Image (tube, rainbow, N blue to C red):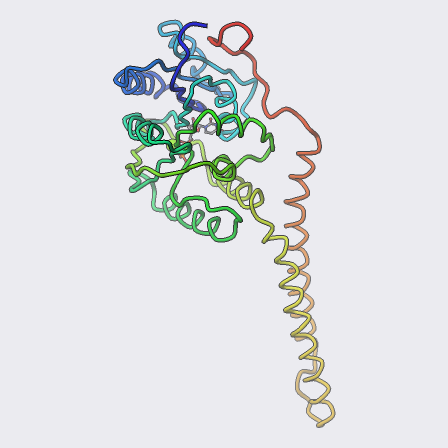
Length: 315
Ligand code: UDP
Ligand code: MG
């Protein structure tokens, strides 16, 4: 159908009515300057404001804007997945709709792609207008995940990246429910490189990632790519058992030598409480993994689409 797009831009959108027209204006300007056919796939992640209407207006005015309308909020990572599923371009660029990822960086990503790189991720050289708390937790998060996961996820890199068609097709085969896209797109391999950029301030509105969602996201990232939390119970178990053996020997020696040290309830109480705590934490960690396994086993679809607009018949 029509002009096959070279570039697809995928943007997940959740309650961004204040930003969407400006996002379209700047993104389409950056893409038009490239002189290649493009499409913009907007995924409405169950917005409760005028976002879906604005999307349809944008599509009516410019059919290169296409809309995937979710039946409810499925979350940022799933919205990105759906956008990539629907995108048809030879290269797919994923970016936030709040203009924190400047569309003007797209030509840089594209240039590296032309050089033969199949994943070009955008690295935040600087973040503007972020609270110190967000910046600190984000930095800490990337460093922890980097250390304990089995793959080399580049630091200070969000979901803003360009992926070759081959990479997108590989991702399509990975339907896990708790998705950490920036990890998955590294896991697939291929030739990868980074491009530095300055992360801008959110144009308007508020972050859609409150602390609770951020924590869940961090847990998804860690559990998706590391067994270390599960193995922690083993390590702590061995350490405590070892200490206990030493304690037994020490106590026997103390008693045989007639010492009265370490009598009493306090020692007992403290060690029982400590062990109880460790056991509950270990159970909780197993629970985190178990819940995720349960979600996989249910085999539900990743997302439900109310309507897909602009993809032509059969898309
Ligand atoms: N978003 C989404 N679904 C959600 C939360 C966020 O599609 O449940 C979108 C949001 O509209 C934005 C992008 O994901 O385009 C990133 O969200 P946000 O800017 O709030 O995150 P932050 O930049 O503060 O980490
Ligand atoms: Mg943002």
